Image (cartoon, rainbow, N blue to C red; front, side, top):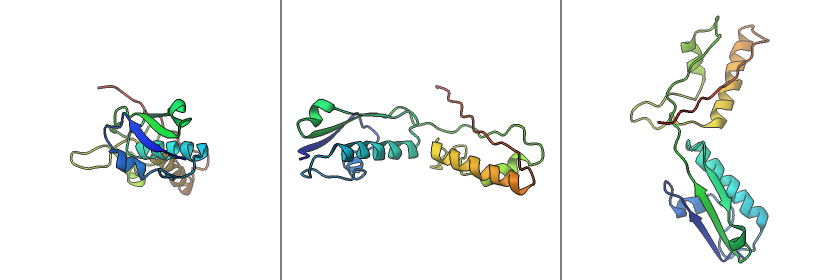
Length: 149
């Protein structure tokens, strides 16, 4: 049985918020699959919120005693400083920017944090734009660049 569920290293999100991301509760039958699934859910949560370098580990010694401990290294929340297009000759960058969800962070606006899933969806949207405009062989590749400071 899950005797206890703990989080270590979480600074941005309270333990109660993170527990809601798990698909099990204290007192339920101990299942390593659920513990791993919970880790995946936590990773998805952090990645969606812009924590591109988050790391989450499960303490195996504690797990053997029925205590689930997720050790979290949140890392920095990654802001988008710019979105640029290269090689687009027939479609203006301003038109392409209208199609995508990934946006530069603007002051006081909550979006603008890096989300790999959104970037992948944007690549598909841009590919569709090119195909609809007769560029069937066009390739769209996202190349994120990360800088410290």
